[in-house]
Structures are given as structure tokens and as C-alpha cells.
Image 1 (cartoon, rainbow, N blue to C red):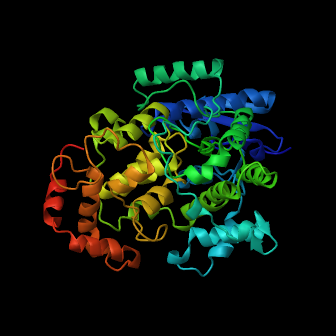
Image 2 (tube, rainbow, N blue to C red):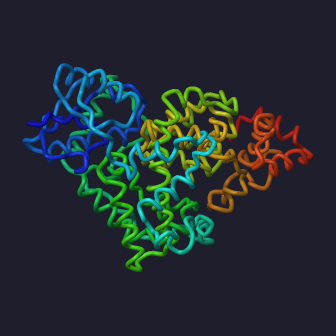
Image 3 (spheres, helix red, strand yellow):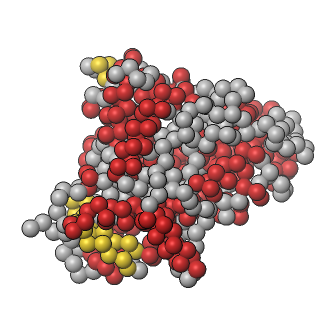
Length: 487
């Protein structure tokens, strides 16, 4: 007989189940170690309990304070988990370890591609083209579909002028059941007992917690949003929190969907004439390219990558508005809105994470490892393997250029172009000095002034730095931002 298989809470889909006995553990200490968003804590417990119900007699569902309390001394097998901490636990338990699952490419695939490449040449675009070529995805023989691997240049449209939303149907949402009600009561009790501390609000549940729900969410995205995803993937509107984004990162990171089946569904929709190539390619690139690449970098860059990455010398603590998800404490309309959305839902789409939350943090010099932890805790799809490359590398340029070739810093003009956030804001994105000075616009120049000695050799920053040197009010702007108290 096969050993019982212990599954972690991000291994809940059918591709982690080979038909033998299953062990699931709900460990309270996991929730108590971090200050999680309440919606995230609810989602994890709901997904675990729903999976236990589905498995019926095949599952041993245990509740304990720590994983060790439930699993020590047992003969178990596991599918290699997705974090350094979880792998250390598995080694301590002495479990039999099966290869990783849940990604398009294996760790061996990546190792073969990366062999001999210096860290500066582990470029996502090259990895993506390698995977497209070797799998034949969106390829016509040796050539990419449409003659290009990347249609990103076509996918940077601002939102429609004077539009409150993209006019798409509301995204799919689950119907809560008795398990969700039970989880909510249990979280109330744990908070009252002081065993966990949560931020944000919860309810109703907005994201898939079961395999059936995940498939429904995938179908809904293909049918109602995929066509518009490409053109508007970088745009934001106050009145449209989802835009054309899939929100499938949540069921993907719970293991309820396999990324290959998402890619296959998107490619099928393109070949059937349902969606344009630019939108299909954009999703394939995010999943088969970016998602797999970030996963592999997590292991390739090592366990100390986050702790040892602070190339720009950023040491400021996160402000209470971030830690408490309090948009009311912020005057800048864009930042206030996104913090409120995260508080309400535990989610924001990728451009809001990169160009609002990340851009602000980069300009203000927040400590990268603390910011990475905050993204893990505050977002329903945040995991230890997702955030290091995304936050520390891409967003904060703290690794000096391994993940991103330049800092992703931008002033208020970018936000004004790609969103409607600036309308009605007390700050003006065109002004960098004085009481109406946009903290993103002024903050951009103050950021460049602070990090100039460290990025002077980056050829992609030559033009911005030349602009900085021509700035007639440079000293005044820097002094203003150094003492700014209202933002």
C-alpha cells in the first residue's frame, strides 16, 4: 500500500492526488505567525475544509497547533512543497519526497536552461521564449504565432476616456456555504482569544476555494474578460476593481488549477477565433513565462536572497497606512484607493501592485524584506515563493538588476495617463513643488536624487538621470520630499 500523502494548503487540486490516502492538517500556528489579511486566512481554511469534505473517507483531516504536533513520527509521503520553510519541515519529518508539481516546467528544466548563465542573464523574456519553443505553445513550426513572441507593445492602452469601467460583466464569484460560515466563526474566536491577528475585512468570499469553483472562474474569464485583457492589462479605473484581469492567481496558488490547463484554455480560445492573439499571448506570457520563472528564481537565487538584497540602501519602515490597510490615512487618491481595495478584498491587480504600491515604496525607500512580507500577508494570492522576485527584485530593484534591468519608478504623469485616479485628487501630477505637488511626481525626482550614485552605471537610467541633472529646483524638491508629512 502507498504511504499516506500529506498535502499542504497550496496542493489541493487533482494533480496532487494520485488516488491513495490523504492527510490534511489545519495548523493554527501557521495563521498566528504572520499578520494575515482576514480574507486570506478565511480562504485557506475554507479551501482546506472543502477539500477534506470532497475526499470523504480517503482523507485524514487533523487540527493541531503545529504541523509537527499532528505529523511527527508518522510515515508519510509529500510532493515537494513550495517554500524553504516547508521543505525544512518535510526534511525534519523524514517524509518521502516526490518531485514538485503545479508548474509548466520542472526545476530540472530550468536548471538546464540556466546552466552557465550569470545571474544578470536569467532574463524572463529569454526563458519565456525557450518554454514557448520547447512546448510548441502558440508556435507555427519554429516561428511564433503572428511572427512575434511578445505583443506587450500593443497591450499598453490607457482606459477609455471618461469611462467609469470597461463595461464588462461582474466577474464570477462563489456562493458561500456552511463551511464558510464555520470558518468565519472560528476566525472570530481565534482573534478574540488573541491567537491570531488579522487585518482587512472578510466576506463575502470572492475567490475560488474548490476545484469546481476554480473551473467556473476560468470559464468565466475566457468568456467575458480575456478578449479585453491584452489592451487594458496596464490600465486602472476607480470604478472597476477587476478590469479584464482573471483573478486566477488565487486558485492557481492554492493548487486548484494547473497552469498548463489555463494556458491550454487560452490557446484554444485563440485558435477558435474567440479572442485576439495579443490577449492570448499576454496571458500565456504571464503564466508560462513569468509565473514559472519567478518560481524557479525562488530556488535558484537561494534562501538568503531576500535578506541579502538591498542594492538601493532602502531602510525606511512601512508606514501604519500600509500595515493597517488604512486608505483613509492617505490623501493621494490613487494610493488611498488601492489600499482601501486591498483592505476590502485582499487583492489588487498587477499594475496597481507595481506602479502604485510598489512605485510608492520604491520612491520612499521602504525596507524590501519588510515589504515582501507585507505583500505575502496582505494579499490573498501572496505566497513565500511568489513575492521575493516580484517585490524585492522587480518592484524594488533591491537585487541590483537580476530580475529587472532598471528600477520601476515613475511619476504622476504615468498614473494620470493609465488611470482615472488623478481626477479629484488634491495633488496635481504636473506639479512637483508646493502644496499641490504630487507625491509621486516629486517623489520620483527625490528617489533619483537619493539613488543616483548606485544606478549611475545603468545605461537604461541615463536619460532619467540626465533629466535630474537639468532640474532647476532639484534641491527644493528633494528637501520638500524629505520633510513631507501629508501624502
